Length: 138
Length: 341
Image (cartoon, rainbow over all chains, first blue to last red; front, side, top):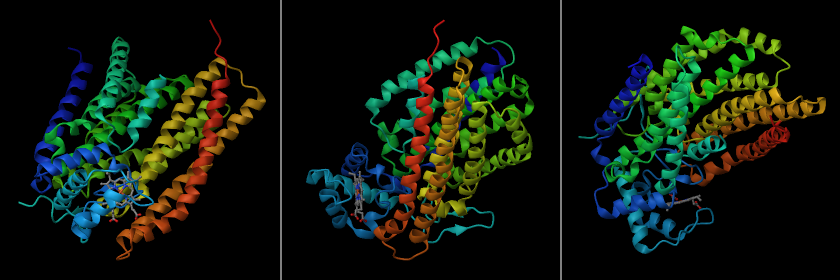
């Protein structure tokens, strides 16, 4: 086997091992589990209607609309359902069925439980790092 | 080739395109990769660094593209934190793979223009290639500093991201040589574009390095500063290198008239100066969004947006000019008749 192949294979193996570690050990945050079937259906609707094109979760996504990480915690399910089912002048009305709206709200409720964004009290260390107090609760 | 370049623009978006569309794209990429690896693999002996970059880029493009679609499996999508982390892990590395291919092309062009292949074989070039690979694999975590995944993911990427200071300092160190090369090759169109791309590397790297410090990222995250970084890199660096390739090839087969040259040079400036304004206005919008969201208590979303809007007007006008400049360049390129042999 020539050395080029060895180098490429080592890079790919490193990438795979690191990915495996991230998938299992790094993201095993049980606060973020979609616990019920409605939330799981909601996640698929979230993908289908591409809500992330305008909204963010943890600050990641499009900037047309507000971040929805703690939407349910801050505003509640009724408020969120109203927006999702009717839209506004700036958010399209997707003409979703009542069930689908509920599913999306359940999904957002699980997102809300997964953590806090924006952080109210980021612990900033002298070397510029931040500690997230709620990172992986037992 | 056209399909190759257009595939990227679709994937740059943060979105999660439906997996049905992903399959044919993935197949196209695999075919392309086989072609690249097959032709490059046939080259015996020591490879110049750009061959390493092309092959690594193409392999990781496929891997990370597949990863970006892992959410179709319930195990990935039914954990919010895992889903978001992997979405940004894959997107970050996907863009990194693409950049690896484009920068490889930049180095290739530099070698062709100077007629000197030596730089593509130096220890230093291989060191930077290696640094690039390490960053491609591990630095994506700076997108997810604020996501409550395991702290070690973030520490790894903080440390790895900071290694890019070496690249930054190297650009400053070799600045004088870069400028003297520009003067030497000042009548070469391709070189002008390469020089522009180098300035954009410098600006965007500075921004990226700052954004990768978690304490700063806490404010810039989720604002238009992220967009400035993404667009500055795509348009400033990648498009300029691709333009350099285009005009390098065209200049080989076409004798530019004075008038054509004037239009191309004008197009160059009309693309680059507004791009700087475009980039700065996004940074301005980002600072303003960060200020209202994170410093002013109880500022509503629409209040914040009102302040951001001012910058967005400037952004829109500048963006339109950039587009005009790039269109002019593309039209000038397409007008060249390719001689039949």
